[in-house]
Image 1 (cartoon, helix red, strand yellow):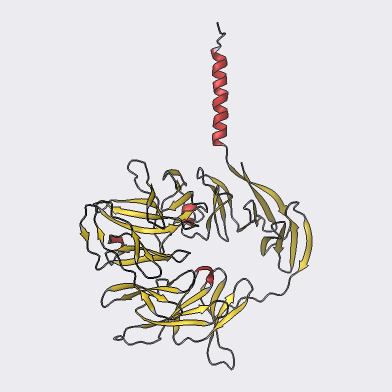
Image 2 (cartoon, rainbow, N blue to C red):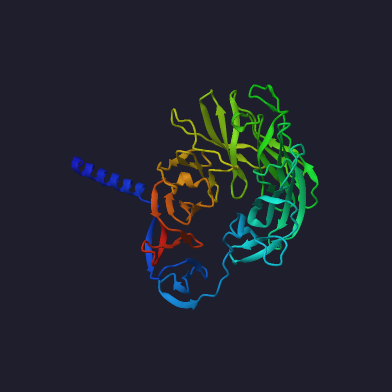
Length: 479
């Protein structure tokens, strides 16, 4: 007979469960302070020399610190750096990450104001723009800011004449005027879209008299109209034809390889009442490659879409009008080449059958793929959610709070919200704050009220200490 001791069995079970629970709840990511650099009041800081050193710029000198030991290596005198023009004599038309477009007041002996591109990294004029015949009203940058697009209109125009708007393409580095398109009824608030190779240009033009909006693709070098993406015929879920004679293309985006032009469509002038789908056109000739089918008897439309970093898949948010006051949102994962449906993200909770998403001014607003495209974050007005892309299951939901640094809020600008550290964390940051969230459980790991600089491997963080007189070096530890 075995000597059975119930108390020992219970004790062993208790120890086993406690160990399992500790392993399950153990944080996979931690952030801890590695060193405090007694720098004084820093104006800027960064990692240099493959992250082996830290450069801290003060008002009159520059300090170089060792990243590993946290010790000061040397002090250098600052060179005199030109300051960006400012004041009442300067008008800023718009800026990107690297450049700004400025109008400088004419100097003595000059006949007109100067329009220049200011390099924000070098703090110098990169190029001067010459050739305007109308007043600038809007400026846009192409991807990577290689091209500058300016929209200008006559200062005075006849009420009866159609507005003749100038769209000019400039080379950002040289300031060379590459092409000038004179277009009627150009929508100045809709950003012109340029293909990645800079050869094609997409515009949206709205004629208020005819109540007609058209999307057109142009040759950026010659100004020749190439084609107008057509909304293809559609059928309802039960096989009935849908009238697309008045349908519009709302949002459009080129793929990086230049093969496709992707866009959302709708059959009404007002997007929130339209019924439409997602279409891929051949970017060279405008022929339809694929379109999403109608899957419901209810009205349905796509609110936005976002490509993964490798552009092999995309996520598209779809909304159904179930009744006058009841709507439902889902997200579809589709193959970019074929449009094939790979997975559907759908909230499984009863009575809450809707993913978190709030559309914005451009497609992809509030959607963030991880670099590997295995994880997706969707954001709405009230919450943000983390999803497993391959299974379509929701992993966790970020807690709701009212502050600008909350993760669901920062999703409105993906420049400030990024995956880091092997995709285990997502960070929300700007010049005033840094928040670090765990993407496995949506818990807040660390919060800082300072701007931050990350090392190349995402394992080290530099930020201003609370006393404003030192710089702190933090490290990210992955368990």
